[in-house]
Amino acid sequence: MCDYSLHDVQSRPAKVGDKLTTRQFDSLTTGFAAPEDANMAVCVCPGTELAFATNVSSHPRWAFGWKTTINQTTAIFRQINKDKPHTHHDALEFADGQFVLLTDLVAGQEATVLQLPAQPAMATEVRAQGPLALIS
Image (cartoon, rainbow, N blue to C red):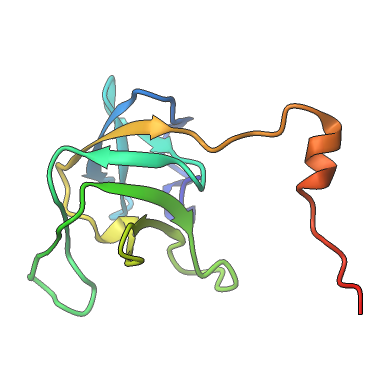
């Protein structure tokens, strides 16, 4: 997915094996840029597994000018705070349970798409993955 602030940026979906780079786009939002075009955002689906070339670095919103290093190189792409419509939702979840907003990542970091989330192959699987009814 691409956060609302990247909707005016040319984009394409992520593919397995993509070598992506974190980039601050003209909208001042950081996202993943395509290797073939630094001005093209690559939209990543929730559940996508990513491997970074080095430990991940971020600029926390509360620590202007500071950089934090997360001692992790793999993450799963998630969407968080979906109940809040006018905020960033794209995030990375690390093995230690830590979440970092994609827009807080330092620009210039390289990540490879390892695996896309599984998609249902048949209509019965789509229905099976739908919401469950609460039986009381």
